Length: 372
Image (cartoon, rainbow, N blue to C red):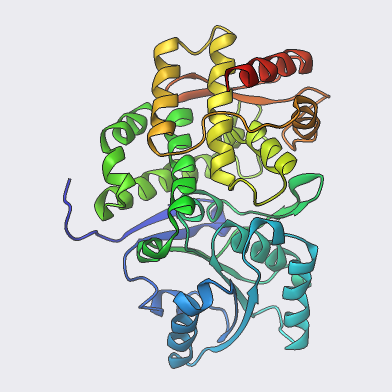
């Protein structure tokens, strides 16, 4: 693999008239021409957080202004616990205060929290205004910024209030990952591993072979991991935009998330990062699949080893089984009272399983706690 210049890539999310490009590469934020060409009018509202504005927001705003764009900005508080109604209202208040119309483009500059909340604001302000996603964390670049899922959290469940709303453009500048704290970076690698474990055996093998390079943030390895993750997601979203496929479809992107969201909500938002909870959730899904006689021991071992080698949690936190089951019972993917689990059947293949009883899942969770 070439470890020198990282070439920029553009992928397409094919959704008919709602299709849009994902641009991936270095120095993209330094050249805002790519953003300007997508703006329906020379007016944007930049939504970011207090941490990112001085790092990237200020320079982006200045560059856009040089192109004659009128730039307004909102700085939200930083953290999953602020993905809520008050923060959403802060965006609406600003849009109304500045009398923003339907041609004002919202630009989400940040991680999954900023992307989700800005996307939801764009979907609902005046019933829909243009949106550009500029994800600055690994997790947002490989997952949350792509595919049009937007939401805020509710104290009783993650991402419970939201909308499907596609952006005009996703711009993933890999340079922004250089300032990402180590824990956030590793959290993002959980979603990268998800694509390999759940959907692409070849990619999983590549991750095993390149995990040291990824742990060191090697630019070329990282660029490939982001590109491959986005390719897999774009393909699945194009086939099942609103997660209605009967045979899995987009639901398969939720490997590790049913357990993971329950862990996040039960612990309290922000205690574990999303990727940390998903990593633990993937281990639980793999262990359960193995117990059910589906995933073989060697594959289970590979899955756990890869997640462990990234420094992500593989043991459950100390939460009452009842609390986890209660949150799993509220999951959006459930149907007819049964918890719908996404379980890996082999490395690179996963299935939707809604046949495991709640009692069986409870017993399984109890058995995992004894091991911790």
